Amino acid sequence: MPDNSSRFAIQLNGEEYTIEGDTSLPALLERLKMRRGRVAVEINRAVIPHAQYDEVRLKAGDTVEVINFVGGG
Amino acid sequence: MEHEHFELAGKVFHSRLIVGTGKYRDFAETRAAVEASGAEIVTVAVRRVNIADRKSENLLDYIDPKRYQILPNTAGCYTVEEAVRTCRLAREVGVGDMVKLEVIGDQKTLFPDVPATIEAAKILVKEGFKVLPYVTDDPVACLRLAEIGCAAVMPLAAPIGSGMGIRNPFNLRIIIEQAKVPVIVDAGVGTASDAAEAMEIGSDGLLINSAIAGAKDPIAMARAMRLAIEAGRIAYRAGRIEQKLYATASSPLSGLIR
Image 1 (cartoon, rainbow over the protein chains, first blue to last red):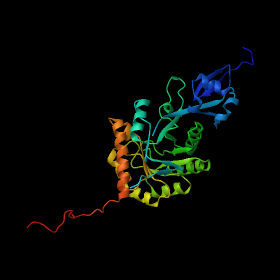
Image 2 (image 1 turned 90 degrees about the horizontal axis):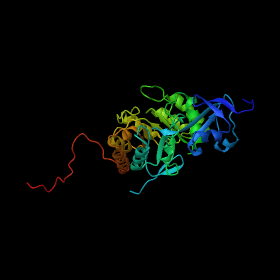
Image 3 (image 1 turned 180 degrees about the vertical axis):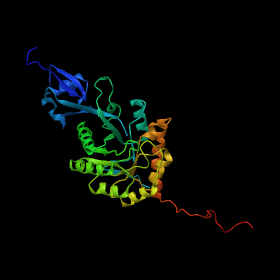
Image 4 (image 1 turned 45 degrees about the vertical axis):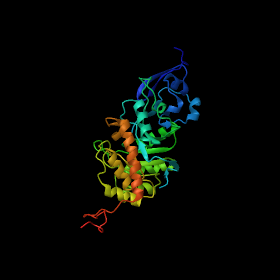
C-alpha cells in the first residue's frame, strides 16, 4: 500500500472505524447516510460547527462522536 | 376570560403542555400523540447515532423542528461535564438553544443531583443556553436556579416515570409563590387529574412523557392531558372557593314551604 494512501482507523461512537479514500467529514457523514440538519459532530472532544464541516479532514486516531436526537422525556 | 399566552425563554407559546418522545412504539405513534397533546415544545434525548443500523429513520422527520420547539434533554447524565457536553452537541444540531438540564444523582430514584445541576446551569447560562432545569421540589434550589439565570424551573411532582402524581403540593405552592421564572412541573404525573391539580395550584406548565406514552391508548391520554391542563389553568385563574369543613347551603334559606 502506498504510504500516502488514506486508509486509517478512527474511534467512531466508541467503536473502531476505518476511513478509506476521502477523509473529509462530509464524506464520512455521507457514507453513514447522515443528514447535516439531523446530527452533530464532536472530534477529540471539540464540537464542530456546521459551517466548518467542509474543511474538516479526519486523521488517524481521531475520536469522533456523531449524535442525533432520539425519543426521550 | 381572554386567551392567555405562555412566555418561556423569550418565546410565546399557547400550549402549557410540554411532551416527551420516549417510550413510544414507533415514530408514527410519537407524532400522533404529540399532535393530540397540542404541545408546541417537545423534548428529545441526545444519543450516539447507531452506526451498525444506518437505515433507521430520524425522529426529526416526524417531529418537524419548524413546527415544534425541540427541547433536547441531558437524560442519563450524572456529572456536570457530561451534561454540559451533551448540551453543546445538542445545540449544534441546529434547533435552538433551549435545553432541559438534568444531572441525575441516583440511578434508582433518578432524583437530580442539585449542586451539580446548579453548577452545570451556571456554565450553560454563561454560554447562552436557555436552561430549563429538572430539579427536586425544593424551594431553595428553585430560587438558586432562577437567580443564576435559568429560563424556568422544573420541579418534579414524583420520581420520573412513577405516575405517583403530586407528592408534595405544599412545596410546589411555595415554589410557585416565590418564583420569578415560570414553574413547569416535570415528572411523576400519572393521569389527567394530576395534571389538572398541578395547574390549579398555579404551575405555569407541565412536562409529561411516561403518563402519555405508557397509557393503553397514548393518543387518547395525550388529549386528556391537553384538556386537563386547559381546565386546570382556567380554574386557577377563575379562583377556587375556600375549603371549609362544614356545609354552606347553596339554595336560599328563605321562602321554604312550611
